[in-house]
Amino acid sequence: MTVQVRLPGGETYRLGGGAGFARPAGPPTSRIAYAAAHVVADPTAENVPGAPAALDWETTLAFRHHLWAHGFGVAEAMDTAQRGMGLDHAATRELIRRSAAEARSVGGRIVAGVNTDHLPPGSYPVAELTAAYRTQLEEVLTAGARPVLMCSRHLAAAATSADDYLTVYSELLAASDEPVVLHWLGDMFDPALHGYWGATDLDLAADTVVQLVKDHADKVDGIKVSLLDAGREVALRRRLPAGVRLYTGDDFHYPELIRGDEQGYSDALLGIFAAIAPAAGAALAALDAGDLATYERIMAPTVPLARHLFGAPTWHYKTGIVFLAWLTGHQEHFTMVAGQQAGRSPAHLARLLVLADSAGLLPDAERAAARARAFFTVAGVAQ
Image (tube, rainbow, N blue to C red):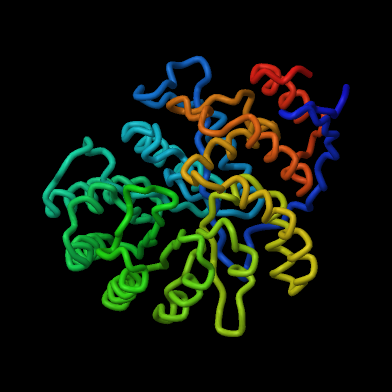
């Protein structure tokens, strides 16, 4: 078989194959690292825009076991799993229930998203949104996962000040019987979240976040920050109370944020880890051992991949995640919930193929090449 692929534009690319990263003996000990996992659609079902999500449960859960095997916790039902882009509430609830049960079976870490997205689009009083959040909070706690209080599009539309956010989140923290992870997702990931925390000025928004955390530090495990701004993340990290973690969600600057500096480091809750789990697991094991050179050597070639995958429009990064999962053999098709496989162009995915190969993330070059050739043929690029 051949490992060559003709790319859009006419270039013929020869895949080099995977780097054979050593699987760690267990989760990292110096950092906590969650990978936000995607969902695998049922390719025989009506996974078209506006239809209820139909999942391939066996393959979806098998991917979570892949992440646990490489030392990661699973961040379930987050935006990587197409929250707000096709994953409806019935599928979300079942996903959390099943994934939490699988986590217990292997002793794996799991957190899961809590949102208000079971409500139809529209305008709601803030008190009603608090009740909606509490419905999903109870579902996650009952399933046995640690809650992640996700940013709510409904709340972003309804809140008139920072005080509205403080009121809603304070009630939710009081209602949880265990510490939660807060969530700050920038509008590059979801434009509907513009002005979250009551301010378009991110410094003012950070002040509100810090006030909330300080007022409820015993109920906050940490906060996931996805602003793609390393300096702003470090500044916020240094303001958090002792014992409250900063989980980086920065898919552009994660190696240096996780490595840290003389004043601290970030833990991680990242979508990119779903695509680079073998490499990142090996890198974190090296970090545990104090081998910074190996950590940097493994992580460095994943950064161009991540920056391309999460390039604007950033919210379509899920398409690249699923494309790579198909190329690497974690699923047998390139079909997504709500037809979101159309979210990236063939040219974008061709560049993704090259960057993943350069990072050593395509373990079976022949399989990856065969699947890439099939995709590009359908896209009109003769092979």
